[in-house]
Image 1: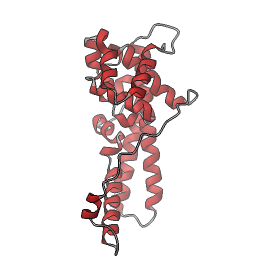
Image 2: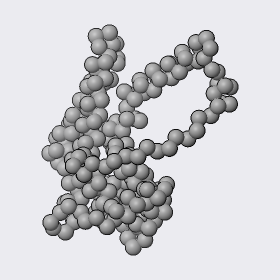
Image 3: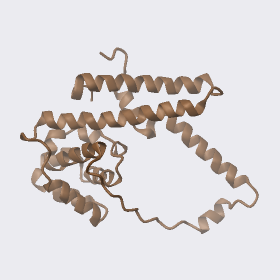
Image 4: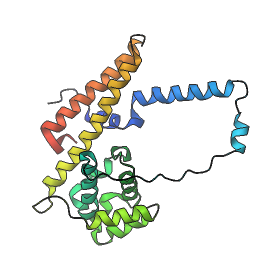
Length: 223
């Protein structure tokens, strides 16, 4: 049992955008930017506006079929595309950051842009074409097609139990990454950190560890 653990609160903190740790990181980056602008010879905002950087091309990313973490992402996306009703509505609550492999994150974004798996469950025949239309380019559309026709890796028919297993696995991977981030941040803070800083990170770490235990013990009931 989780006792006083607020599960929705922990789920929000799994996403880097919602954590105390991320806010400190953003504040430090903003401070560095201000310091750089104040140095002699540093270009001001006007100079920066005149020289807007060109939009960089997305680098090629080679998928690794032997990577266990990537396998979880891939299998869950296949379920979302081929059997949206099995992962709805839980899948729609998963953030793009829970798919750290760039091509899979783009597919996740396309699924959201197409209305989410709830829309796919309501109109399964039109679902895959709808997701492809929402993709940003041909490379992502090709990956969506690949994931749509590639069989899921189960000897039995895909069912709610199989889908739930991968929903839990992906969330566990996200929680483990946040736990690693918290531990690394505590080490960087060092002995000079204030009790407020250390306490916030320790609290987040404890909440994440409790949530991980709940996922392992209760499975989809803890999502």
